[in-house]
Image (cartoon, rainbow, N blue to C red; front, side, top):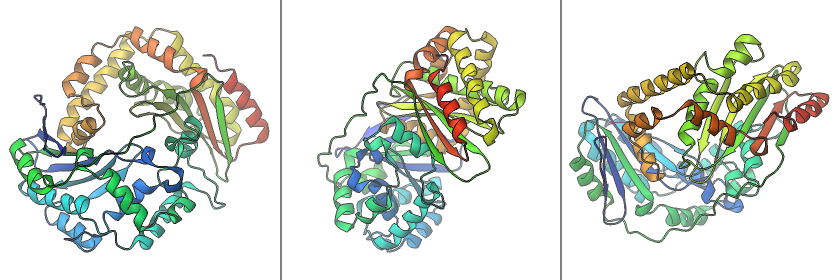
Length: 430
């Protein structure tokens, strides 16, 4: 499979390769995506995907320590890092194009020959990382984690990616090794290289380093629970702070839904730039908040559009009706053509600018192949220009509904304000 923008190869053992030739650049981005993350976990081993990502850096058969690994990457122009989300674990580094093969050899050492040393030291580091989500009293105050629990109660998607102190305490070496053997498999890996490199270079080096890796059957995943028709829900957490943080979210279908590109435009209309609707109304006109941001989280079979902002406690009862008015206007009234044209133009500029950002293209093509969402820049350009004001309004009307709405409030809110805001939530004009 190929296009004018990328080339895809599959090794006999199932490893998939994406080559994105960018001859105008002077560095290459090398990324390894494994299809394993928080949704693969049970309650008992919550956080194990993230734990395993950390442990891969704790030395290999070829590089005994994390310092040895980091220095080996630095010697080829790299700075290795990794991240874990609900669906994928990503290992990535910039490398000098002349050292692409050496970069692949380093990633092969990490992914195929980890030694899992110093497990208890890494556990303590992860526990410190986990504390960032809690206040001094041990109460969870991370709005994203609180929202996930509201959206997907009782499902792995509703759990923290880092896990809990209890689940982390129960993850021992046999548990890590078993999880590694289950999910770190060749058919579960996508390798993407973006930069002044060739398809033959990547295929040859990947065959040498990963071609002998034996495939095995992968476990199955539980689908996201289907939403039930219900009234909106809220979660309130008292915390000592100078402001109250709000996150309002609408549950969405998966990223392959035909309305998702319209949702991405809605996000831009809401908060992308100073002239976007939410900052214009809530900040510039009313002075209720310093910043407000809309974001999309899109998974294979579910997702959500969220709006985050912080306000002074006294302004809490004022902000939700104003926010609802902005959303209701998008649902009920046709978008002005000039506003849509400006949003599309800005999106098209960003697509063009991404051709100078190898890390951005590695996400587009590497993650895209892994996630079953491989889209070219040209596809996005064409479909963006086919969006109409009517399609945007229809998407807003169908997806921004009271039934799909959740609210998280964290901070020094007052009990009388909570009662009022919950009434506002249930009386939302859509």
